[in-house]
Length: 102
Figure 1: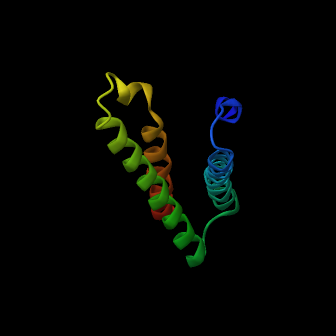
Figure 2 (figure 1 turned 60 degrees about the vertical axis):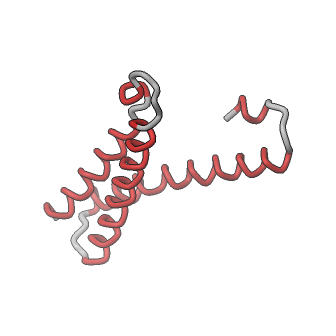
């Protein structure tokens, strides 16, 4: 983030990128907090199951999108160097598995 802030390019584009950065951060931080709360508090209600299912699908979609981008990038060893896809898929899979256990 800081190299982008220090770079010299259109200020409007820089502000848009700053907005995207912070929105991405928020969308990556808050769902795990909800999942942790649901796990510790006990997700026994139907509404919780729908919320957890949504977050599981969201994280799986992020993982699939990252995996697609990495495998089509043409960069050597990209699957190992850009491994975020595995973490997103793991969170999605564990959240989905948690629905069946609740």
